[in-house]
Image (tube, rainbow, N blue to C red; front, side):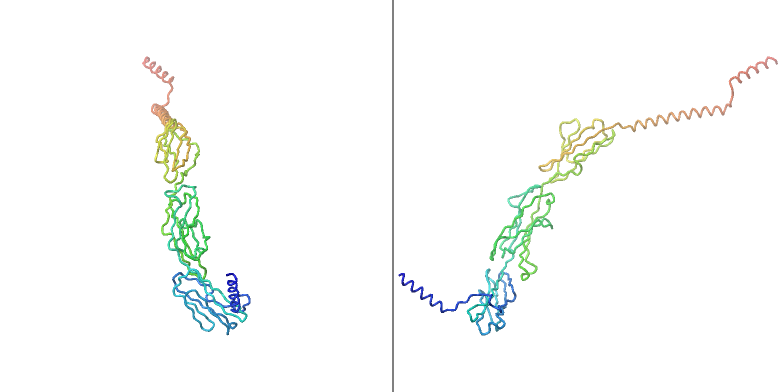
Length: 370
């Protein structure tokens, strides 16, 4: 059977050598076919059309044509028209050509980009539910379903209006695929209460739809981040001096999520007292209130500590007031005594005690002479 098979092969080879073989080439061609538009972008299922001028004059008298895998073609001289009423092929192209006497084929391949906007877009946090914790890493994942071509897709992650990051695909395919895009983030207090979302944009160039098809995740992620506590004041405030009887205010307020709870350790006490407020108030401070106050603000898994040093001093104002009152009374008494003394002198006149006795003796002598 081997000789017979060899004979058949040789016969076929000889037959084929009698048939002109054309190789599509652009190098020796001075007059190449020209497609309009130069690139064709069409949505899957839509209609489209393109024209090709096979040549200006080089192909007159030669064979020229337009090969297409779908739709219809028509000719008007060397102008060939391709029309598709319903684009249902993902990988397609058209070939416009003409043949030369040297069995060379001058041709241009017109590649067609068939696209499909995303069917849906969704965002979530990978392998996590519930609140996030500050400074811990999480992975945002954005799933884009049934989009083509995925290599033209750009996915942008947003925190509110701020861009967190951009992701693209390494996949190269013409048909629709569903792909997941991821972005690693470190949670911060600024993320608490904001909305996380992702946006898919299919960029198909200037010949594609303008603006490009854009779809945002249908549901946003309402981020809850546990953070803090962060003190609103200093962790090491300056020592305080307060006057006995005054009101003492100590403030170790902090912010955090969840809101922090406060535990105060008072002077001469080994136990802590739980407060719902970061402000400790003591009215009418006494000497027993002096010393070290320790406040611990606890939120989630962290604690912030503030140490207050309070020195209570004697209130000298009452003593000053008493001294002033006593001084005023003594002054008034002195003024009164001076006044009384001066008043008696004015009423009785100025006299000397010796003159009184002399006058009394003279009066007795005159009485005896009479």
